[in-house]
Image (tube, rainbow, N blue to C red; front, side, top):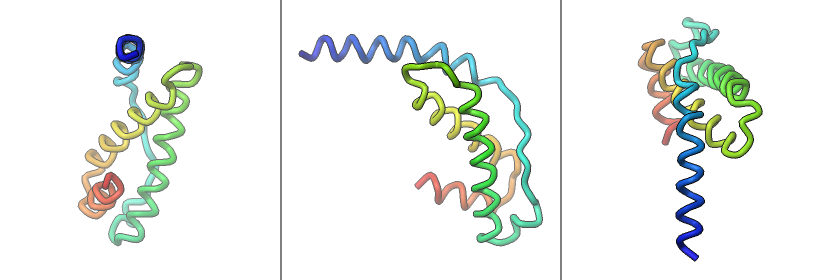
Length: 102
């Protein structure tokens, strides 16, 4: 019983790894209002907008991948969103991001 599950897990890992590696290099610009980042409420609103942009792009990047697509989109979204927040370099937005990650 365990051997087929292990084999299936290894197969998924083998299939997903090249797909993840192939999509790590895209560039994207996000639109946001720097003025709204001054308050926690404004930063939360901008964070939601940025997240929506990132999700849309990651879904487009992984469209048609079939098996494992949801995992790929989730991984892409988390990685890209973290990179965007880091590059925007605003402490209020960074705090919102940390709170969202849990």
